[in-house]
Length: 214
Image (cartoon, rainbow, N blue to C red; front, side, top):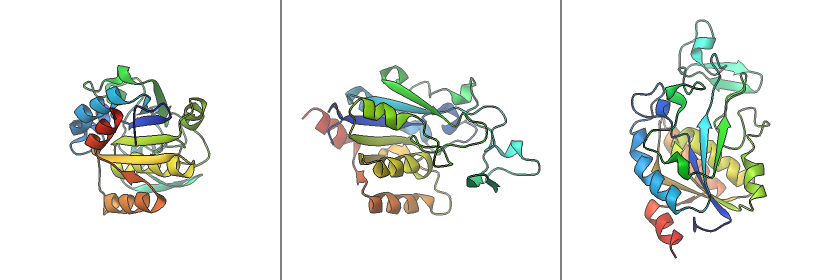
């Protein structure tokens, strides 16, 4: 995949303070991808950022449900929903991109999870699987046919984004070198198996950077 091609987008998923060490929902070594993400963003012709952007009291927060603890589940109108610590609340430090991330290099930013009653893992659809984030329309309007996905976390938001990209017909790659995982009860290997089975291609950062200059 040549990330300087005009028909290819680099999707950088949720590299935000709350998902990095010290954050409310930290992914182990989440900030370890920042340098690689910057290199890829600056090599790509069409880098796109996604940003969790929850209102206070969001339905996915355990604190919004009396007696519920983080990492338990509830049933919402669209099905089973994991409950999380409060994170990425709009206009807070935790919702901001990691300070080392070259966010100015992005051509577009997609905010997701801002609807009070629906969580959003995927860059393309919220968790009801019907409400679109607008990313597909944006990419289509720019003639994008292929995407390379990086970011946080491999087995949650990156995974759902990869699976939706494939379902929407994009040629899709994941660069795990520029991702980090939560890996709850085998979730990382399960995500890898599902992505491979659907047709995602695994690439290294070196391959993406090399191909970008070919």
